[in-house]
Image (cartoon, rainbow, N blue to C red; front, side):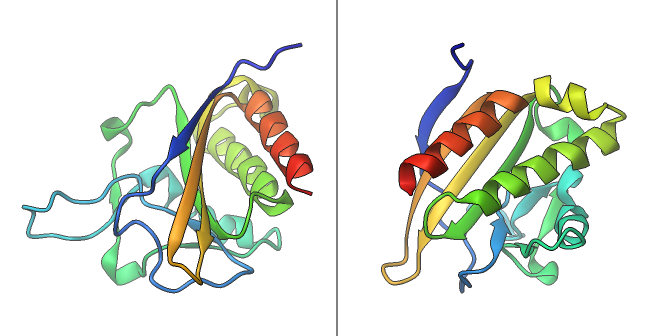
Length: 164
């Protein structure tokens, strides 16, 4: 069975990555950065992610926002595509099992927020962008996977197996 996915390379915007990274943390990256002409330079996160890191930490996964509480703001739901659940994550190193777990937790989180079942979440359109961070060089290599939730998870599992 072929997976119904779209893969793309992704270059995280300058300013979207954390200034300092730890190897045991997955970072939630902002959905948007303010325009250069804006007086407010706060990174903009989707409102649906406001309590995601805290919720996931309860499951034992180290997840935090890429920017401090004082410097981030949240976008209302109507400012994004409501038909696609989106998240951008960053981690030191390559895609691994922790990213898969974080994406599973994101699907559960969004299902609870929107009144969907866990089964519905697996068929919902999902867009996951992942930045693989290299603290030694300061570079980030990114990918985006988009498709039904279950297919995105299968694709990430395949990426992990290929990287082993």
